[in-house]
Image (cartoon, rainbow, N blue to C red):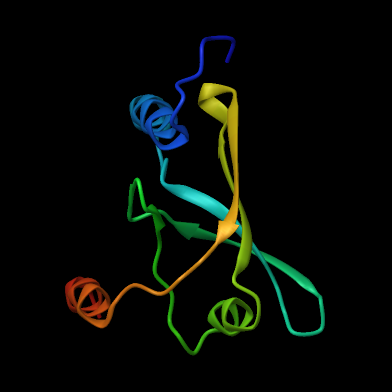
Length: 113
């Protein structure tokens, strides 16, 4: 996209994400999440963005999953949103942290069995 970028990257992502939601027919909130295990082996999988704000991007995982074990070992991640219909991809790098217990409980109680 050849345009002026906003100074705040979260504000910029919000604009791009809103655009993707109008153009991407399935799962505009899907992104690839890359982690590294305790032996240095990279792993990538697709997860769903549940929310985002100026504190970061929110996704959920089972704390007993391989993904969670990788994140416990090394909290640094790389994420990629790819929106073919928008001819756009967004790379994000950062460090994850767990949400508090009550935030997790609210989400898991809403999930279908």
